[in-house]
Amino acid sequence: MRARRDVGARLEQSLQLSAHAAACPITIVAARWVRWASASFDGGRHELTIELEATPAAARWLMALPETELPIPGHLVADLIVVQRATVCGRTTARLEVLTVEAC
Image 1 (tube, helix red, strand yellow):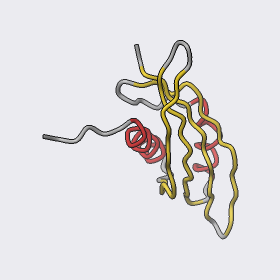
Image 2 (image 1 turned 60 degrees about the vertical axis):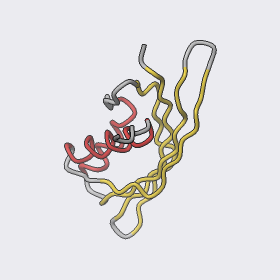
Image 3 (image 1 turned 90 degrees about the vertical axis):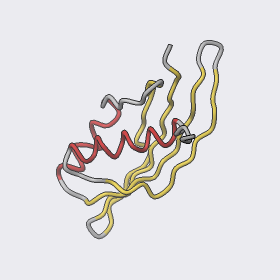
């Protein structure tokens, strides 16, 4: 039997595919998520730290990321914030906070 991937792994894959399509591949340095629920929705709160080469393409991708559609089977990205970004020695490190909800 094949193990079902959780929403955190699917979010990571979607971010990697989006970055690759924008010609700025990322490395996920750290990732964690916890289940989250409101009166109307179930989902997850995610915190990720990513690293990528500091290029104009990477800067454009990070700037557009909060509005980028990230397909995740069975879930929707309800909110994505680039909380922190720093560039040192040609590498950009960014911390993301993401809220996913289960699709109805």
